[in-house]
Amino acid sequence: MDKYTILKKYFGYDQFREGQETLIDAILEGRDVLGIMPTGAGKSICYQVPALLFSGITIVISPLISLMKDQVQSLNQAGIHAAYINSSLTENQILKALSLAAAGQYKIIYVAPERLETYEFLEFAKRAELSMVTVDEAHCISQWGQDFRPSYLKIVEFIQKLPKRPVISAFTATATQAVKEDIVCVLGLDHPKVLVTGFDRKNLYFSVETPRKKDIWVMDYVKTHERESGIIYCATRKNADALYEQLNQSGIPVTQYHAGLGKEARRCNQEDFINDRKPVMVATNAFGMGIDKSNVRYVIHYNMPQSLENYYQEAGRAGRDGEPSECILLYSPQDVMINRFLLENKEENPEFTREEIDTIRERDEERLRMMTYYCVTKNCLREYILHYFGEYNHVACGNCSNCLKEYIEKDITKEAKMIIQCVLQLRQRYGINVVAGTLAGDNRAKLREYHVSDYPCYGSLKEYTEKEIKQMIQHMILECLLVQTKDKYALVKVTPEGRKLLEKERKVMIKTVKEEKKEASKDGSGNRTSSAKKRKSDILNSKGLELFEVLRTLRTELAREEAVPPYLVFSDKTLVDMCVKLPFDREEMMGVSGVGENKFQKYGNRFMDRIKEFTGGEKEKLYFGEQNEM
Image (tube, rainbow, N blue to C red; front, side, top):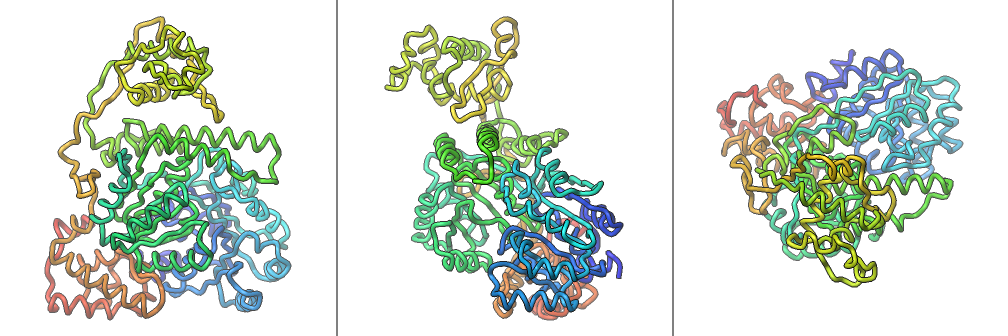
Protein backbone atom coordinates (compact mmCIF):
# COMPACT_ATOMS: atom_id res chain seq x y z
CA MET A 1 0.00 0.00 0.00
CA ASP A 2 1.06 3.60 -0.55
CA LYS A 3 0.23 6.72 1.47
CA TYR A 4 -2.83 7.58 -0.66
CA THR A 5 -4.33 4.11 -0.28
CA ILE A 6 -3.88 4.27 3.50
CA LEU A 7 -5.42 7.74 3.65
CA LYS A 8 -8.57 6.56 1.86
CA LYS A 9 -8.81 3.05 3.30
CA TYR A 10 -8.44 3.93 6.96
CA PHE A 11 -9.33 7.60 7.23
CA GLY A 12 -11.82 8.04 4.39
CA TYR A 13 -10.15 11.06 2.73
CA ASP A 14 -9.29 11.46 -0.94
CA GLN A 15 -6.52 14.00 -0.47
CA PHE A 16 -4.16 15.35 2.15
CA ARG A 17 -4.64 18.70 3.84
CA GLU A 18 -2.13 21.52 3.71
CA GLY A 19 1.28 20.44 5.03
CA GLN A 20 0.40 16.81 5.75
CA GLU A 21 2.01 15.29 2.66
CA THR A 22 5.18 17.37 3.05
CA LEU A 23 5.76 16.05 6.58
CA ILE A 24 4.77 12.47 5.68
CA ASP A 25 7.24 12.42 2.77
CA ALA A 26 10.04 13.76 4.99
CA ILE A 27 9.34 11.08 7.63
CA LEU A 28 9.28 8.31 5.01
CA GLU A 29 12.67 9.57 3.79
CA GLY A 30 13.98 9.03 7.33
CA ARG A 31 14.17 12.72 8.28
CA ASP A 32 13.24 14.17 11.67
CA VAL A 33 10.33 16.61 11.48
CA LEU A 34 8.68 19.34 13.51
CA GLY A 35 5.11 20.17 12.52
CA ILE A 36 3.43 23.27 13.94
CA MET A 37 -0.17 23.06 12.76
CA PRO A 38 -3.39 24.52 14.18
CA THR A 39 -5.85 22.33 16.06
CA GLY A 40 -8.05 20.49 13.59
CA ALA A 41 -5.44 20.59 10.80
CA GLY A 42 -4.84 16.85 11.03
CA LYS A 43 -1.50 16.56 12.86
CA SER A 44 -2.12 12.93 13.86
CA ILE A 45 -2.39 11.74 10.26
CA CYS A 46 1.14 13.11 9.68
CA TYR A 47 2.59 10.37 11.89
CA GLN A 48 -0.14 7.72 11.67
CA VAL A 49 0.19 7.26 7.89
CA PRO A 50 4.01 6.74 8.01
CA ALA A 51 3.58 4.48 11.05
CA LEU A 52 1.46 2.11 8.95
CA LEU A 53 4.03 2.15 6.14
CA PHE A 54 7.08 1.57 8.33
CA SER A 55 8.10 -2.02 9.05
CA GLY A 56 8.48 -1.45 12.79
CA ILE A 57 6.56 0.11 15.68
CA THR A 58 5.86 3.79 16.25
CA ILE A 59 5.82 5.05 19.83
CA VAL A 60 3.72 8.18 20.38
CA ILE A 61 4.56 10.10 23.56
CA SER A 62 1.48 11.90 24.80
CA PRO A 63 0.91 13.93 28.00
CA LEU A 64 -2.59 12.87 29.04
CA ILE A 65 -4.46 9.62 29.53
CA SER A 66 -7.62 11.05 27.96
CA LEU A 67 -5.72 11.98 24.80
CA MET A 68 -4.24 8.48 24.43
CA LYS A 69 -7.57 6.76 25.00
CA ASP A 70 -9.29 9.00 22.48
CA GLN A 71 -6.65 8.49 19.79
CA VAL A 72 -6.54 4.70 20.27
CA GLN A 73 -10.34 4.45 20.14
CA SER A 74 -10.33 6.48 16.93
CA LEU A 75 -7.65 4.28 15.35
CA ASN A 76 -9.44 1.07 16.36
CA GLN A 77 -12.66 2.45 14.84
CA ALA A 78 -10.75 2.98 11.59
CA GLY A 79 -9.50 -0.63 11.65
CA ILE A 80 -5.96 0.15 12.87
CA HIS A 81 -4.54 -1.89 15.78
CA ALA A 82 -3.15 0.46 18.41
CA ALA A 83 -2.68 0.45 22.18
CA TYR A 84 -1.84 2.80 25.02
CA ILE A 85 0.30 2.28 28.11
CA ASN A 86 -0.21 4.51 31.12
CA SER A 87 -1.10 4.51 34.80
CA SER A 88 -4.77 3.67 34.11
CA LEU A 89 -3.70 0.07 33.33
CA THR A 90 -2.66 -2.60 35.79
CA GLU A 91 0.87 -4.02 35.60
CA ASN A 92 -0.52 -7.25 34.11
CA GLN A 93 -2.39 -5.29 31.43
CA ILE A 94 0.79 -3.36 30.60
CA LEU A 95 2.86 -6.56 30.33
CA LYS A 96 0.21 -8.11 28.08
CA ALA A 97 0.13 -5.01 25.83
CA LEU A 98 3.94 -5.04 25.53
CA SER A 99 3.88 -8.75 24.74
CA LEU A 100 1.29 -8.27 21.99
CA ALA A 101 3.26 -5.33 20.60
CA ALA A 102 6.46 -7.40 20.51
CA ALA A 103 4.52 -10.07 18.59
CA GLY A 104 3.51 -7.51 15.96
CA GLN A 105 -0.07 -6.97 17.10
CA TYR A 106 0.24 -3.17 17.31
CA LYS A 107 1.82 -0.72 14.87
CA ILE A 108 1.25 2.32 17.09
CA ILE A 109 1.68 2.52 20.86
CA TYR A 110 0.75 5.62 22.86
CA VAL A 111 2.74 6.07 26.04
CA ALA A 112 3.01 8.60 28.87
CA PRO A 113 6.47 10.23 29.18
CA GLU A 114 6.87 8.89 32.73
CA ARG A 115 6.59 5.32 31.38
CA LEU A 116 9.82 5.75 29.38
CA GLU A 117 11.85 5.52 32.58
CA THR A 118 10.51 2.12 33.66
CA TYR A 119 12.69 -0.96 33.27
CA GLU A 120 9.99 -3.05 31.53
CA PHE A 121 9.27 -0.47 28.86
CA LEU A 122 12.91 0.32 28.18
CA GLU A 123 13.73 -3.38 27.77
CA PHE A 124 10.79 -3.77 25.39
CA ALA A 125 11.95 -0.74 23.38
CA LYS A 126 15.51 -2.07 23.14
CA ARG A 127 14.33 -5.43 21.77
CA ALA A 128 11.57 -4.16 19.46
CA GLU A 129 12.04 -2.65 16.02
CA LEU A 130 11.21 1.00 16.60
CA SER A 131 10.77 2.91 13.36
CA MET A 132 9.68 6.23 14.86
CA VAL A 133 9.24 8.10 18.12
CA THR A 134 6.57 10.80 17.90
CA VAL A 135 6.32 13.58 20.47
CA ASP A 136 2.78 14.93 20.61
CA GLU A 137 2.05 18.28 22.30
CA ALA A 138 5.76 18.98 21.83
CA HIS A 139 5.54 22.45 23.42
CA CYS A 140 5.51 20.61 26.77
CA ILE A 141 9.27 20.09 26.40
CA SER A 142 10.01 23.83 26.52
CA GLN A 143 10.18 25.67 29.81
CA TRP A 144 8.98 28.71 27.85
CA GLY A 145 5.88 26.80 26.74
CA GLN A 146 2.57 27.25 28.55
CA ASP A 147 2.39 23.59 29.66
CA PHE A 148 6.01 22.75 30.47
CA ARG A 149 6.38 19.23 31.86
CA PRO A 150 9.77 18.17 33.30
CA SER A 151 8.93 14.54 32.40
CA TYR A 152 9.26 15.49 28.72
CA LEU A 153 12.98 16.07 29.26
CA LYS A 154 13.31 12.29 29.81
CA ILE A 155 12.44 11.68 26.16
CA VAL A 156 15.97 12.52 25.00
CA GLU A 157 17.53 10.15 27.55
CA PHE A 158 15.17 7.38 26.41
CA ILE A 159 16.12 7.84 22.74
CA GLN A 160 19.83 7.83 23.59
CA LYS A 161 19.48 4.43 25.29
CA LEU A 162 18.00 2.78 22.18
CA PRO A 163 20.39 0.57 20.15
CA LYS A 164 19.34 2.32 16.92
CA ARG A 165 18.05 5.89 16.66
CA PRO A 166 14.55 5.96 15.11
CA VAL A 167 13.02 8.85 13.18
CA ILE A 168 11.93 11.58 15.59
CA SER A 169 8.77 13.54 14.79
CA ALA A 170 7.31 16.30 16.95
CA PHE A 171 3.98 18.13 16.68
CA THR A 172 2.22 21.00 18.40
CA ALA A 173 -0.53 23.51 17.69
CA THR A 174 0.82 26.54 19.56
CA ALA A 175 4.46 27.59 19.63
CA THR A 176 6.11 31.00 19.62
CA GLN A 177 9.54 31.33 18.00
CA ALA A 178 11.29 30.71 21.35
CA VAL A 179 9.29 27.53 21.97
CA LYS A 180 9.94 26.28 18.41
CA GLU A 181 13.69 26.73 18.87
CA ASP A 182 13.51 24.98 22.25
CA ILE A 183 11.77 21.93 20.76
CA VAL A 184 14.40 21.50 18.04
CA CYS A 185 17.28 22.00 20.46
CA VAL A 186 16.10 20.01 23.49
CA LEU A 187 14.82 17.05 21.46
CA GLY A 188 18.05 17.03 19.47
CA LEU A 189 16.27 16.92 16.12
CA ASP A 190 18.77 16.13 13.35
CA HIS A 191 18.47 18.64 10.47
CA PRO A 192 14.69 18.43 10.76
CA LYS A 193 12.07 19.38 8.24
CA VAL A 194 10.27 22.18 10.08
CA LEU A 195 6.84 23.10 8.78
CA VAL A 196 4.62 25.85 10.13
CA THR A 197 1.34 25.74 8.23
CA GLY A 198 0.03 28.76 10.09
CA PHE A 199 -2.07 29.22 13.18
CA ASP A 200 -5.24 30.44 11.51
CA ARG A 201 -8.49 28.53 12.11
CA LYS A 202 -10.74 30.03 9.46
CA ASN A 203 -13.86 28.23 10.70
CA LEU A 204 -13.67 29.91 14.12
CA TYR A 205 -15.45 33.17 14.88
CA PHE A 206 -13.75 35.20 17.63
CA SER A 207 -15.53 37.63 19.89
CA VAL A 208 -14.84 39.64 23.05
CA GLU A 209 -17.96 40.66 24.97
CA THR A 210 -18.26 42.81 28.10
CA PRO A 211 -21.70 41.97 29.56
CA ARG A 212 -22.66 43.53 32.88
CA LYS A 213 -24.05 40.19 34.09
CA LYS A 214 -22.07 37.28 32.74
CA ASP A 215 -24.36 34.61 34.22
CA ILE A 216 -27.42 35.93 32.37
CA TRP A 217 -25.42 36.27 29.14
CA VAL A 218 -24.21 32.65 29.34
CA MET A 219 -27.68 31.35 30.21
CA ASP A 220 -29.23 33.10 27.20
CA TYR A 221 -26.47 31.89 24.88
CA VAL A 222 -26.68 28.24 25.95
CA LYS A 223 -30.48 28.21 25.67
CA THR A 224 -30.34 29.58 22.12
CA HIS A 225 -27.77 26.92 21.20
CA GLU A 226 -29.50 24.05 23.00
CA ARG A 227 -28.80 21.36 20.40
CA GLU A 228 -25.09 22.20 20.29
CA SER A 229 -22.15 21.02 22.34
CA GLY A 230 -20.01 23.62 24.09
CA ILE A 231 -17.39 24.25 26.77
CA ILE A 232 -17.54 27.15 29.25
CA TYR A 233 -14.22 27.87 30.95
CA CYS A 234 -14.02 29.58 34.35
CA ALA A 235 -10.87 30.84 36.07
CA THR A 236 -11.78 29.42 39.50
CA ARG A 237 -13.58 26.37 40.90
CA LYS A 238 -15.95 28.70 42.74
CA ASN A 239 -17.12 30.30 39.49
CA ALA A 240 -17.37 26.91 37.80
CA ASP A 241 -19.51 25.47 40.62
CA ALA A 242 -21.84 28.48 40.71
CA LEU A 243 -22.36 28.58 36.93
CA TYR A 244 -22.88 24.80 36.76
CA GLU A 245 -25.60 25.00 39.44
CA GLN A 246 -27.41 27.81 37.61
CA LEU A 247 -27.41 25.98 34.28
CA ASN A 248 -28.33 22.66 35.87
CA GLN A 249 -31.27 24.16 37.77
CA SER A 250 -32.53 25.63 34.49
CA GLY A 251 -32.81 22.14 33.03
CA ILE A 252 -29.81 22.40 30.72
CA PRO A 253 -27.99 19.07 30.21
CA VAL A 254 -24.72 20.26 31.74
CA THR A 255 -21.81 18.68 33.59
CA GLN A 256 -18.65 20.05 35.21
CA TYR A 257 -14.94 19.36 35.61
CA HIS A 258 -12.29 20.75 37.93
CA ALA A 259 -9.54 19.51 40.24
CA GLY A 260 -11.79 19.81 43.31
CA LEU A 261 -13.98 16.92 42.13
CA GLY A 262 -13.03 13.32 42.85
CA LYS A 263 -11.22 11.27 40.21
CA GLU A 264 -14.26 9.08 39.50
CA ALA A 265 -16.60 12.09 39.29
CA ARG A 266 -14.26 13.77 36.79
CA ARG A 267 -14.09 10.59 34.71
CA CYS A 268 -17.87 10.13 34.64
CA ASN A 269 -18.51 13.80 33.85
CA GLN A 270 -15.99 13.74 31.03
CA GLU A 271 -17.60 10.61 29.58
CA ASP A 272 -21.06 12.24 29.76
CA PHE A 273 -19.74 15.21 27.80
CA ILE A 274 -17.81 13.22 25.19
CA ASN A 275 -20.77 10.92 24.55
CA ASP A 276 -23.19 13.88 24.26
CA ARG A 277 -25.30 12.72 27.19
CA LYS A 278 -24.56 16.14 28.67
CA PRO A 279 -23.28 18.27 25.78
CA VAL A 280 -22.44 21.37 27.86
CA MET A 281 -19.29 21.34 30.01
CA VAL A 282 -18.47 23.96 32.67
CA ALA A 283 -14.81 23.63 33.66
CA THR A 284 -11.58 25.17 34.80
CA ASN A 285 -8.46 24.87 32.64
CA ALA A 286 -7.91 21.44 34.26
CA PHE A 287 -10.20 20.14 31.49
CA GLY A 288 -9.62 19.71 27.83
CA MET A 289 -6.03 18.95 26.88
CA GLY A 290 -6.21 15.93 24.63
CA ILE A 291 -10.00 15.95 24.30
CA ASP A 292 -10.55 15.28 20.61
CA LYS A 293 -14.32 15.84 20.57
CA SER A 294 -14.92 17.06 17.04
CA ASN A 295 -18.41 18.57 17.34
CA VAL A 296 -17.83 21.28 19.98
CA ARG A 297 -19.66 24.22 18.43
CA TYR A 298 -18.70 26.91 20.94
CA VAL A 299 -16.13 27.67 23.63
CA ILE A 300 -17.00 30.47 26.05
CA HIS A 301 -14.43 31.90 28.44
CA TYR A 302 -16.32 33.18 31.48
CA ASN A 303 -13.05 34.78 32.62
CA MET A 304 -10.01 35.97 30.72
CA PRO A 305 -7.24 33.30 30.61
CA GLN A 306 -3.67 34.03 31.73
CA SER A 307 -2.12 33.98 28.26
CA LEU A 308 -2.91 33.91 24.56
CA GLU A 309 -1.26 30.49 24.35
CA ASN A 310 -3.78 29.14 26.88
CA TYR A 311 -6.66 30.99 25.25
CA TYR A 312 -5.94 29.81 21.72
CA GLN A 313 -5.43 26.23 22.85
CA GLU A 314 -8.68 26.21 24.85
CA ALA A 315 -10.69 28.13 22.26
CA GLY A 316 -9.28 25.77 19.62
CA ARG A 317 -11.28 22.90 21.10
CA ALA A 318 -14.21 24.30 19.13
CA GLY A 319 -14.78 23.21 15.56
CA ARG A 320 -12.16 20.47 15.28
CA ASP A 321 -14.26 18.99 12.46
CA GLY A 322 -13.77 22.16 10.42
CA GLU A 323 -17.37 23.28 10.80
CA PRO A 324 -18.18 26.91 11.79
CA SER A 325 -17.88 27.43 15.56
CA GLU A 326 -17.68 30.34 18.01
CA CYS A 327 -14.99 31.37 20.50
CA ILE A 328 -16.30 34.01 22.88
CA LEU A 329 -14.41 35.69 25.71
CA LEU A 330 -16.40 37.52 28.40
CA TYR A 331 -14.08 40.22 29.71
CA SER A 332 -14.17 42.37 32.81
CA PRO A 333 -11.25 44.29 34.37
CA GLN A 334 -11.60 42.14 37.51
CA ASP A 335 -10.32 39.18 35.45
CA VAL A 336 -6.86 40.78 35.41
CA MET A 337 -6.77 40.90 39.21
CA ILE A 338 -7.96 37.27 39.48
CA ASN A 339 -5.24 36.08 37.12
CA ARG A 340 -2.54 38.12 38.84
CA PHE A 341 -3.56 36.52 42.15
CA LEU A 342 -3.41 33.05 40.58
CA LEU A 343 0.04 33.74 39.13
CA GLU A 344 1.39 35.05 42.42
CA ASN A 345 0.17 31.93 44.21
CA LYS A 346 1.27 29.44 41.55
CA GLU A 347 3.27 26.53 42.96
CA GLU A 348 6.97 26.83 42.15
CA ASN A 349 8.70 23.95 40.40
CA PRO A 350 11.48 22.68 42.72
CA GLU A 351 13.59 21.71 39.70
CA PHE A 352 14.08 25.38 38.74
CA THR A 353 16.72 27.74 40.06
CA ARG A 354 15.71 31.06 41.63
CA GLU A 355 16.89 32.87 38.48
CA GLU A 356 14.74 30.61 36.28
CA ILE A 357 11.71 31.12 38.55
CA ASP A 358 12.11 34.92 38.35
CA THR A 359 12.44 34.74 34.56
CA ILE A 360 9.32 32.58 34.26
CA ARG A 361 7.35 34.96 36.49
CA GLU A 362 8.40 37.89 34.31
CA ARG A 363 7.34 35.93 31.24
CA ASP A 364 3.96 35.14 32.86
CA GLU A 365 3.38 38.83 33.59
CA GLU A 366 4.16 39.74 29.99
CA ARG A 367 1.76 37.07 28.73
CA LEU A 368 -0.98 38.37 30.98
CA ARG A 369 -0.50 41.88 29.59
CA MET A 370 -0.67 40.63 26.00
CA MET A 371 -3.86 38.75 26.87
CA THR A 372 -5.35 41.91 28.39
CA TYR A 373 -4.51 43.91 25.25
CA TYR A 374 -6.39 41.30 23.18
CA CYS A 375 -9.50 42.00 25.26
CA VAL A 376 -9.36 45.78 24.77
CA THR A 377 -8.04 46.16 21.22
CA LYS A 378 -10.39 47.61 18.62
CA ASN A 379 -8.48 45.97 15.77
CA CYS A 380 -9.11 42.56 14.20
CA LEU A 381 -8.97 39.85 16.89
CA ARG A 382 -7.75 37.11 14.54
CA GLU A 383 -4.98 39.37 13.23
CA TYR A 384 -3.90 40.10 16.83
CA ILE A 385 -3.66 36.37 17.66
CA LEU A 386 -1.74 35.49 14.51
CA HIS A 387 0.64 38.41 15.00
CA TYR A 388 1.35 37.15 18.52
CA PHE A 389 2.42 33.78 17.12
CA GLY A 390 4.69 35.38 14.55
CA GLU A 391 2.45 35.66 11.48
CA TYR A 392 2.60 39.24 10.24
CA ASN A 393 1.06 39.12 6.77
CA HIS A 394 -2.61 38.90 7.73
CA VAL A 395 -5.23 41.61 7.30
CA ALA A 396 -8.61 42.13 8.96
CA CYS A 397 -10.52 38.84 8.76
CA GLY A 398 -14.12 40.05 8.52
CA ASN A 399 -15.13 37.22 10.86
CA CYS A 400 -14.62 38.48 14.40
CA SER A 401 -16.61 40.80 16.65
CA ASN A 402 -14.26 43.74 16.02
CA CYS A 403 -14.42 43.37 12.24
CA LEU A 404 -18.23 43.34 12.44
CA LYS A 405 -18.44 46.60 14.36
CA GLU A 406 -18.39 50.02 12.79
CA TYR A 407 -16.07 52.50 14.47
CA ILE A 408 -15.65 56.22 14.48
CA GLU A 409 -12.20 57.64 15.11
CA LYS A 410 -11.70 60.25 17.78
CA ASP A 411 -8.70 62.55 18.12
CA ILE A 412 -7.32 62.19 21.67
CA THR A 413 -3.98 63.96 21.09
CA LYS A 414 -4.69 66.54 23.81
CA GLU A 415 -5.75 63.85 26.28
CA ALA A 416 -2.73 61.69 25.41
CA LYS A 417 -0.38 64.57 26.20
CA MET A 418 -2.11 65.09 29.55
CA ILE A 419 -1.72 61.38 30.35
CA ILE A 420 2.00 61.48 29.51
CA GLN A 421 2.49 64.61 31.63
CA CYS A 422 0.67 62.91 34.51
CA VAL A 423 2.87 59.78 34.31
CA LEU A 424 5.99 62.00 34.35
CA GLN A 425 4.70 64.12 37.25
CA LEU A 426 4.04 60.91 39.21
CA ARG A 427 7.68 60.04 38.44
CA GLN A 428 6.62 56.85 36.61
CA ARG A 429 6.13 55.06 39.93
CA TYR A 430 2.53 53.84 39.61
CA GLY A 431 0.31 51.53 37.59
CA ILE A 432 -2.73 52.21 35.40
CA ASN A 433 -5.22 52.41 38.27
CA VAL A 434 -3.38 55.17 40.11
CA VAL A 435 -2.67 57.16 36.93
CA ALA A 436 -6.33 56.93 35.79
CA GLY A 437 -7.62 57.78 39.28
CA THR A 438 -5.34 60.82 39.47
CA LEU A 439 -6.44 62.14 36.09
CA ALA A 440 -10.11 61.58 36.95
CA GLY A 441 -9.68 63.40 40.29
CA ASP A 442 -10.81 60.45 42.40
CA ASN A 443 -10.60 60.79 46.17
CA ARG A 444 -10.30 57.18 47.33
CA ALA A 445 -8.08 56.31 50.30
CA LYS A 446 -5.22 54.84 48.29
CA LEU A 447 -4.87 58.00 46.22
CA ARG A 448 -5.00 60.20 49.34
CA GLU A 449 -2.21 58.08 50.80
CA TYR A 450 -0.08 58.82 47.72
CA HIS A 451 -0.96 62.56 47.92
CA VAL A 452 -1.77 62.63 44.21
CA SER A 453 -3.99 65.69 44.70
CA ASP A 454 -0.78 67.70 45.16
CA TYR A 455 0.18 67.23 41.50
CA PRO A 456 -0.92 69.67 38.75
CA CYS A 457 -2.34 66.78 36.71
CA TYR A 458 -4.87 65.84 39.42
CA GLY A 459 -8.38 66.00 37.93
CA SER A 460 -7.13 67.27 34.54
CA LEU A 461 -9.35 64.72 32.75
CA LYS A 462 -12.26 64.77 35.20
CA GLU A 463 -14.76 65.02 32.32
CA TYR A 464 -13.93 61.35 31.58
CA THR A 465 -14.66 58.27 33.69
CA GLU A 466 -11.75 56.19 34.98
CA LYS A 467 -12.80 53.41 32.62
CA GLU A 468 -12.53 55.76 29.63
CA ILE A 469 -9.12 57.02 30.78
CA LYS A 470 -7.88 53.44 31.20
CA GLN A 471 -9.00 52.68 27.65
CA MET A 472 -6.93 55.65 26.44
CA ILE A 473 -3.89 54.48 28.43
CA GLN A 474 -4.21 50.93 27.07
CA HIS A 475 -4.50 52.32 23.55
CA MET A 476 -1.35 54.40 24.11
CA ILE A 477 0.47 51.27 25.27
CA LEU A 478 -0.56 49.52 22.05
CA GLU A 479 0.69 52.59 20.16
CA CYS A 480 4.06 52.33 22.01
CA LEU A 481 3.65 55.78 23.60
CA LEU A 482 3.59 54.17 27.04
CA VAL A 483 4.94 50.88 28.35
CA GLN A 484 4.35 48.75 31.45
CA THR A 485 7.19 47.20 33.42
CA LYS A 486 7.45 43.42 33.15
CA ASP A 487 6.77 42.61 36.77
CA LYS A 488 3.71 42.19 38.99
CA TYR A 489 3.59 45.95 39.67
CA ALA A 490 3.18 46.81 35.96
CA LEU A 491 4.30 50.42 36.44
CA VAL A 492 3.43 52.79 33.61
CA LYS A 493 6.44 54.42 31.93
CA VAL A 494 6.76 56.92 29.08
CA THR A 495 8.59 55.65 25.99
CA PRO A 496 10.93 57.83 23.85
CA GLU A 497 8.10 57.95 21.31
CA GLY A 498 5.77 59.23 24.03
CA ARG A 499 8.18 62.01 25.00
CA LYS A 500 8.36 63.08 21.36
CA LEU A 501 4.59 63.55 21.39
CA LEU A 502 5.02 66.42 23.85
CA GLU A 503 7.44 68.17 21.50
CA LYS A 504 6.10 67.69 17.99
CA GLU A 505 2.80 67.59 16.16
CA ARG A 506 1.29 64.17 15.56
CA LYS A 507 -2.19 62.92 16.14
CA VAL A 508 -3.30 60.13 18.44
CA MET A 509 -6.55 58.60 17.24
CA ILE A 510 -8.71 56.07 19.09
CA LYS A 511 -11.61 54.00 17.77
CA THR A 512 -15.00 54.01 19.47
CA VAL A 513 -17.89 51.76 18.49
CA LYS A 514 -20.52 53.35 16.29
CA GLU A 515 -22.78 50.42 15.46
CA GLU A 516 -22.62 46.88 14.13
CA LYS A 517 -22.62 46.47 10.40
CA LYS A 518 -25.69 45.05 8.71
CA GLU A 519 -23.80 41.85 7.89
CA ALA A 520 -23.71 40.97 11.57
CA SER A 521 -26.83 39.20 12.77
CA LYS A 522 -27.88 39.22 16.38
CA ASP A 523 -28.85 35.91 17.94
CA GLY A 524 -30.99 35.39 21.02
CA SER A 525 -28.06 35.69 23.40
CA GLY A 526 -27.16 39.18 22.29
CA ASN A 527 -23.85 38.17 20.73
CA ARG A 528 -23.05 38.89 17.13
CA THR A 529 -22.49 36.22 14.52
CA SER A 530 -20.80 36.61 11.18
CA SER A 531 -22.42 36.28 7.80
CA ALA A 532 -19.12 34.78 6.61
CA LYS A 533 -19.78 31.61 8.60
CA LYS A 534 -21.44 28.60 6.97
CA ARG A 535 -23.45 26.51 9.41
CA LYS A 536 -25.47 23.39 8.58
CA SER A 537 -28.48 25.66 8.11
CA ASP A 538 -26.55 27.63 5.49
CA ILE A 539 -25.69 24.45 3.53
CA LEU A 540 -28.78 22.25 4.00
CA ASN A 541 -32.37 23.25 3.27
CA SER A 542 -35.18 22.42 5.70
CA LYS A 543 -35.58 18.85 4.47
CA GLY A 544 -31.80 18.41 4.50
CA LEU A 545 -31.74 19.47 8.15
CA GLU A 546 -34.46 16.90 8.89
CA LEU A 547 -32.30 14.17 7.33
CA PHE A 548 -29.30 15.40 9.30
CA GLU A 549 -31.26 14.90 12.55
CA VAL A 550 -32.32 11.41 11.40
CA LEU A 551 -28.68 10.49 10.72
CA ARG A 552 -27.57 12.06 13.98
CA THR A 553 -30.07 9.90 15.87
CA LEU A 554 -28.74 6.80 14.08
CA ARG A 555 -25.18 7.83 14.96
CA THR A 556 -26.15 8.05 18.64
CA GLU A 557 -27.77 4.59 18.49
CA LEU A 558 -24.62 3.04 16.98
CA ALA A 559 -22.38 4.84 19.46
CA ARG A 560 -24.38 3.41 22.37
CA GLU A 561 -24.24 -0.07 20.89
CA GLU A 562 -20.45 0.11 20.66
CA ALA A 563 -19.84 2.23 23.79
CA VAL A 564 -17.90 4.89 21.87
CA PRO A 565 -18.42 8.66 21.52
CA PRO A 566 -20.78 9.56 18.64
CA TYR A 567 -18.13 11.63 16.82
CA LEU A 568 -15.97 8.49 16.51
CA VAL A 569 -18.71 6.91 14.40
CA PHE A 570 -18.90 9.86 11.98
CA SER A 571 -18.31 13.59 12.40
CA ASP A 572 -20.98 16.24 11.82
CA LYS A 573 -19.13 17.17 8.64
CA THR A 574 -19.49 13.62 7.30
CA LEU A 575 -23.22 13.57 8.11
CA VAL A 576 -23.72 16.88 6.27
CA ASP A 577 -21.87 15.45 3.25
CA MET A 578 -24.19 12.43 3.32
CA CYS A 579 -27.19 14.76 3.25
CA VAL A 580 -25.74 16.50 0.20
CA LYS A 581 -24.62 13.38 -1.74
CA LEU A 582 -27.43 10.98 -0.67
CA PRO A 583 -25.37 7.79 -1.16
CA PHE A 584 -27.46 4.75 -2.13
CA ASP A 585 -24.66 2.25 -2.86
CA ARG A 586 -21.12 1.41 -1.77
CA GLU A 587 -19.39 3.51 -4.42
CA GLU A 588 -21.42 6.59 -3.54
CA MET A 589 -20.93 6.11 0.19
CA MET A 590 -17.16 5.72 -0.25
CA GLY A 591 -17.23 9.13 -1.95
CA VAL A 592 -18.46 10.79 1.24
CA SER A 593 -15.74 12.68 3.15
CA GLY A 594 -14.63 10.72 6.22
CA VAL A 595 -15.93 7.28 5.12
CA GLY A 596 -13.11 4.72 4.92
CA GLU A 597 -13.32 1.00 4.25
CA ASN A 598 -13.54 -0.09 7.87
CA LYS A 599 -16.26 2.42 8.73
CA PHE A 600 -18.18 1.49 5.58
CA GLN A 601 -18.10 -2.18 6.60
CA LYS A 602 -19.30 -1.31 10.12
CA TYR A 603 -21.84 1.43 9.44
CA GLY A 604 -22.32 2.01 5.71
CA ASN A 605 -25.41 -0.13 5.13
CA ARG A 606 -27.22 1.20 8.22
CA PHE A 607 -26.76 4.80 7.09
CA MET A 608 -27.67 4.04 3.46
CA ASP A 609 -30.84 2.25 4.58
CA ARG A 610 -31.85 5.23 6.72
CA ILE A 611 -31.18 7.65 3.80
CA LYS A 612 -33.21 5.51 1.38
CA GLU A 613 -36.04 5.26 3.90
CA PHE A 614 -36.09 9.04 4.35
CA THR A 615 -35.94 9.87 0.62
CA GLY A 616 -38.06 6.98 -0.63
CA GLY A 617 -35.10 5.98 -2.79
CA GLU A 618 -35.37 9.16 -4.87
CA LYS A 619 -32.46 11.55 -5.38
CA GLU A 620 -33.36 15.13 -4.55
CA LYS A 621 -31.51 18.32 -3.73
CA LEU A 622 -31.39 18.86 0.03
CA TYR A 623 -28.87 21.69 -0.01
CA PHE A 624 -28.47 25.28 -1.21
CA GLY A 625 -26.19 26.32 -4.08
CA GLU A 626 -23.89 24.01 -6.00
CA GLN A 627 -22.51 20.77 -4.59
CA ASN A 628 -18.90 21.82 -5.18
CA GLU A 629 -19.38 24.59 -2.61
CA MET A 630 -19.13 21.97 0.14
